[in-house]
Length: 388
Image 1 (tube, rainbow, N blue to C red):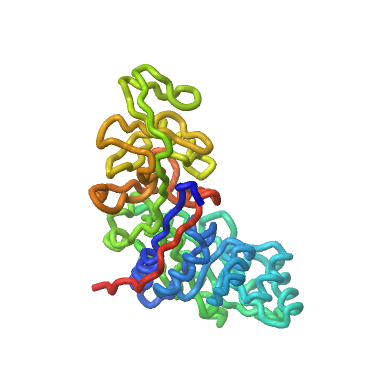
Image 2: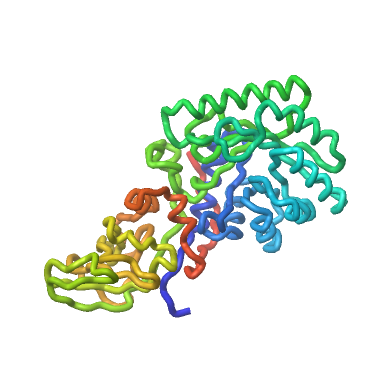
């Protein structure tokens, strides 16, 4: 492999974050969410690291994602977090993947799959308390759980909901959703229908809303060391998270150009002085957004922030390296993360939330859009440090 662009993943950081989230959750179990290829970190490696840090379950978006883990030899409990197509339900049951269901039709499909597989289908009933995406109406929860109880081959493993605005401190929506869910759980308990596992909390709720933790928490973005939102960045437990991902490349070409020269497609950047430009072999085909340079995006070379000059192209981008120490072909370029080692280790870092702020999006989108052309290079997992 000669192309230097890649994603470096610190698996010890994921293990550390899993241990911290397990501690933060108190007595609740941790479901480590590794959907979307482990939020761009590599699902199999991220899953193993999270389990080594204390996670007891894994969360995925689809049965196909679950089977990737199973084929890699991951035998931990796995939950597919949303309703699945009927034909996927059979694979889920055969491979012991727990299913989230929202309707009597979902339950019927699970029963058919259990009959065909000769093993039980373990189900979590999802209730819509305000997200308005998927989930049963709370008024339908009792009859649906009765349906699960009377359907041969299926078992009620859990009841759950999902918060729409847990990452926004001070917004009453989370409290309102929680109140609806607590009332429902109380009703289920009174009727003898409460499943063994009650769960609601995502990363933001786990870190900022203690009352939402119940029996299990489902953590995605925090597992990878990123704050669920900029508003939660200063929460003490969030500050203890360790970002696990760096996007790296290397300078492939350096040239000097006079003032007044347009750079990259459309000449959206024009040199205002004699300039040193460095080309880097990474682009929007790898997940670096095309307009990042037009919104103030930078990269680290030699520990110095270098502005992206002009639009990012599919396979390459250009850095303005006029200021700072000289830049040479082969020098490491850090697009996301910190530059480590020697004089370059100046403590500066470019985070996913910095890109997100420049591009009017969220860090989740930044890391999950890093493309398959970027190899994931995983550092060996080490035991997470003990927390005082």
